[in-house]
Image (cartoon, rainbow, N blue to C red; front, top):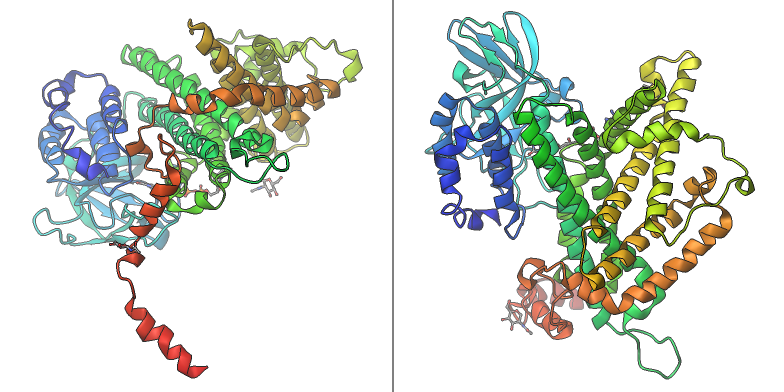
Length: 608
Ligand SMILES: Cc1cc2nc3c(=O)[nH]c(=O)nc-3n(C[C@H](O)[C@H](O)[C@H](O)COP(=O)(O)OP(=O)(O)OC[C@H]3O[C@@H](n4cnc5c(N)ncnc54)[C@H](O)[C@@H]3O)c2cc1C
Ligand SMILES: *[C@@H]1O[C@H](CO)[C@@H](O)[C@H](O)[C@H]1NC(C)=O
Ligand SMILES: CC(=O)N[C@H]1CO[C@H](CO)[C@@H](O)[C@@H]1O
């Protein structure tokens, strides 16, 4: 849990936070902070929001005066904070949030209210029992006008007694799918007064007389979001590589059934179906690791530009991080389950670690931007770029392929009429077909919108009626980006043996994506039926080719036994002995005969 590790890192990064924080660029404190966080054995905990949201939001949005007032108490855990944005009625649609903060110039205070049941803050981690402060997102009203969402530091519990303050109704939201260690909470505000100086005023301000001062750029709020989403891409890689490590190691320890009668039972990893379940996920874990690195580097580069006042690449980064967040978390979410089921019955035991990996990972599909909504945001950028390309504008960056798309027709062409230039063994050629698939699906989505509008639908209705196509287009775009980044990465690898095995993985990743989406490639006439057959056959060869290296490839992720915390995934493979030991430690075994035997079971006998 983070609580235990919190004090470990106090000694090292202290110098960074103490003097120079005020000179650091806008976004980088969050950055450094999260780097620190991600280097620990992560288990969700009640202080997560304090560390990962409350403190970074202070660093990003507090004025110098506010830093002086709040930072040290926060650092010392006198202030324990959370980030309260979501309400019972609204999460995705931020403009729909109902909590109000109304400025009262007479006392120079904000008055906070939860006017309806649906406006009660719901879900913030650590809110239920742990926090004594919350950064509350509320609609700001001053001089009779609403200025939209702003962040306010609201004390919610007495700092000495921890008793809720007047006007504060706070508690835990109850048991969840997982995250039991995190007291996700509710918060109802009833005429809660806070000083004017508690509004985070680094950018937007309310002056003592109530005059509202706009932030210099609305884009500034992009930065943190982009950063956190790009971190989640890295989280996907970590969760999937852990799951693959467990499932692949265990599959080489486990023997079951027989292939040839009379022969010893094979390792389950020697069943073709087992390899087909796990090796594409292994390839995906590598792909996502490289994509995660790329996102981090790109973020750093662009946040440098932002600090120099150059926002030009921000929309692309925003679209990329939203789409890849959704793409990688969805894939990982289902991949973890595949890994768990591939371990048979023991995968269901918590000793495998896979159930915990799943419940802790799966909310990434929902928080920091619900995945479908993220895909639609990316689609908005893609459609806009497509229209610009059609209007003759030269696009730059990762969407520049939409300029080339003009040559392709969307109507599926008779396959025979198309020259089959695709070489299924050549990654460059595969990157090209993924690119064309993306271009075609973006065009299809854009045309769907156009068609809807020709049927006299409004822009908004046209969008809603094309949303399936839009998500599909984003998905294809992200898939192309992942295949491309994996292929690009190979160019950086000098070692021949490593290059060879990673090329095999990249090829498997690309070909597997083709078989699972073969409809797209066939419909678009990018591949023909014989080629799809060839792809399936080639995948089988690649599985056999990867088999001897499979365990080494998961070892290379370097998940230490302690971090993996999985009996099935032990590095030494000594699974059965430790499974027995693990079970013996179960609380139910603490007593040889439990009192429930005498109390409940034995009396049953007399009744029969
Ligand atoms: C474990 C966990 C921890 C959390 N921690 C915090 C926290 O600390 N602080 C905090 O403030 N919040 C927190 N949240 C809340 C979280 O941020 C929201 O749940 C999330 O943003 C999703 O919003 P929602 O619940 O409103 O989903 P909804 O938007 O209601 O989603 C429901 C469905 O509607 C669809 N949908 C919604 N809008 C659209 C659209 N425009 N187009 C198409 N489909 C749409 C979605 O795709 C989805 O299928 C947490 C949630 C969880 C699960
Ligand atoms: C959105 O589209 C779906 C499917 O086309 C349709 O059923 C629904 O009524 C639309 N929603 C609104 C609010 O118009
Ligand atoms: C039979 C057996 O192994 N019992 C163990 C059950 O668990 C307790 C600890 O919780 C051990 O002390 C027992 O030896």
